[in-house]
Image (cartoon, rainbow, N blue to C red; front, side, top):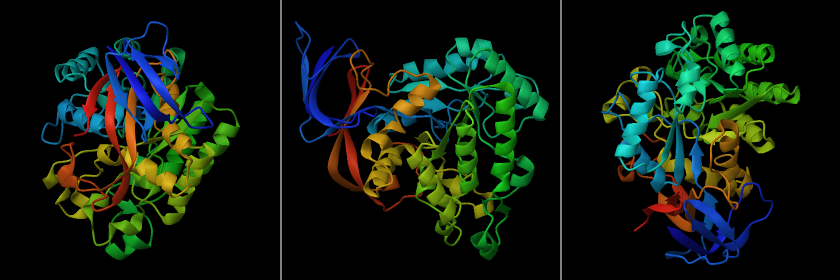
Length: 426
């Protein structure tokens, strides 16, 4: 199929300036910018005057609950939510049921995505250890050959530091990316809220910053020992940002992300036991939130993710410590990124880079660029629309949002996967 996108404003992550231009697509790729190649004939024209054209978003951490938890969500529902909200690529952590520790599970995920029309690209992240049990290493080479883009143990602990070192050595030997969410399980305990005045007032079990920073310090040392290319996910603390900044300055092969909700919410938002605000890592202090914003702005934090964790209604109706942690984030990812621009945390191109070209480069994925020869995973955004976040309007099966009633600006009008329009607003 050939497509001409006319008069859109290109938001190119790598470019210092924005410009209005035409795009010409054929055979799933961008074949011309500004001028059509000789002999090009468009089968379809998409008029984009007054709208932004961006690379499709790449969400480097999104749980689709498939396979294993159909009561919460599935690939069909979550890829539909993704394309409506401009997300063309989803990276799936290994803590599915069963875990992504063998080729059969990887093939099942690919098959289910194909069965539902391949609405969005779904890239599995393989398990570091078999069954995520933290003891025996998985067959990373086989998982990589079957399409896993990185390796992680999700939130499951490794048996000891020796197992972690061996896993990182193995990954380094085959030049694979390791993804770590730094959590010291002993310090995490049964905590559910940031250690501070709010947790004390509400009588909630607390999670100290050291549950993240102590683990992160050890993990950084193992990166220095093994040379494994490592990505640290879902950081939440000011000290973590500083540790990442200093480790990068030493030239260690690391990158980092944080969940986008951490840039807006704090432990004060828990209010009177609002379980929609229960996350792991927990919402931290305003000081931590501001430090995360500074880390995003100066490049210490490379990417933003939704940390999408859809739940059925009953999972959030329990008392706060017993509720299941996590926020349904696909429907608000782009909107929150644009809010960062409105609040002057980031310029528009930099905000989009955190969700496109940066994760693409770190994970070795196609997409994330607007250039001749690139895959035509693109979105068209109307920057002037305003909408109120209402969970009842979500496409995701997870209605557990922390942003109910927020007023957002900007919405996706078209999503293209490999040059094909897979979503168009009515």
